[in-house]
Image 1 (tube, rainbow, N blue to C red):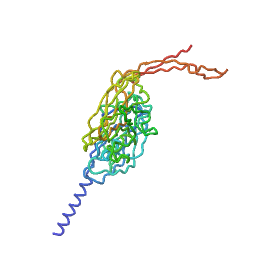
Image 2: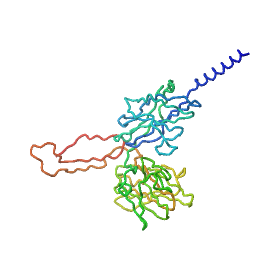
Image 3: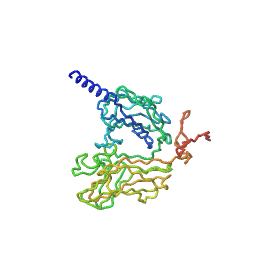
Image 4: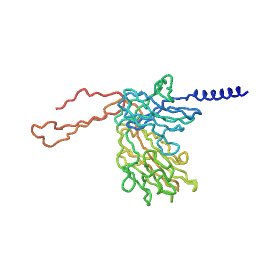
Amino acid sequence: MKKNLLVGLLLIIITSTMTIRAQAPTITITNLDTFAIQGMAAQPVLKINIDAGAADYLTLQNFVIKSLCQDSTDIDSVAVFCSGKNNRFSFADYSSDIVSLLTKRKKFHKDSVTFGSLSFNLDPGTNYFWVVLDLSKTSKPSHYLNATTRAGGITINGITYPATAPPPPTKQITIWQKYFTENFEKANTDGTPYGWVSRYFDTEKINWMLHQGGFGTNDNIPGNGNPSNAKSGKKNARFAVGYTMWKSSMLYRTKPIDLTLAVKPLLTFYHAQMYNAILDKQDSVSIYYQQLPDTTWRYLKGYQLATPDNGSWVKREVVLPSALAGKNINLGFKGYANYGWGVCVDSVVIYETLSANRAINDIVVTQPNIGIAPQSSADNPIIRVNIRVRGNTNSITMSSFTAT
């Protein structure tokens, strides 16, 4: 009887041990359907889900990332981030959006890069990883980029995955030309956004200010409002009054935005405004533009309702009127105070969304030096030729240059 019991216990122990060792993670590799903006950092291109099941002892040791970019010079560096169990990649500093960099950034060597010696402990359940590319400032519009891994490119507990190489992506990520960007990180001495000015519509002059997040009951404490942080960086633009209603002010650029080479420009920005449930009130924002040299402000789009998730950041996309392509414009954000918790704007970008063949837009010839050229001197500039090219696909070749 004792012998049979001992054998039974031994079988139970062996069976349990073998079950744990046989457990393997499930890995899903997804190329993201997105776009890239010229010079953009941390552009996500690949999502890797590692489902560890119930196991709590699996360790990620190695990542091999393979480049599928059209031109390697478009990329400065590569990085891998983990967002834990959150299926979302964002740098907003909320508890639900925290992403961690696995190890320092690296550069592609030929067509791949290896992130080794990671020793990253996987949590039970699904772990989300994101491969991001940092685009160079000289990245070329209309080029495409992407990334993948190879067979055996992921190592977990000494075992390599996947068994075969992932299928190629069905769609590439296009690099679009960037015309304008603003992250609201630099302030004037009075705390207003640098390069912007407030236009007042009331006798009480209320400025848009740089601030960390939204308006709060203890507004002098950073992060007290909602949202508690900027969407990118440390600051965002904010219009908030709190103690009154029917006040408004427009934040607009002090310098024009050049869209003279644009074909179909798109405005994107992040926006947050929280509903005041105590007073049943809501602040709001509207977008205006000027088609210079006409200085008339024209309405473009307005947002009267609170942003989702209790006033969290949401991305807005607004197609600019076709008449603005080929023009210089100005852009304004008009905030309306109505006893709400303020209006926040961050990460403003205007970029191209349409492929067009390159063509000569204009040629300007000037004489930069009308002074005296010393006798026997060399390299005296006497003519400057500026050739501006519109479009983003194909190429234009200058075959000859004649000066008389």
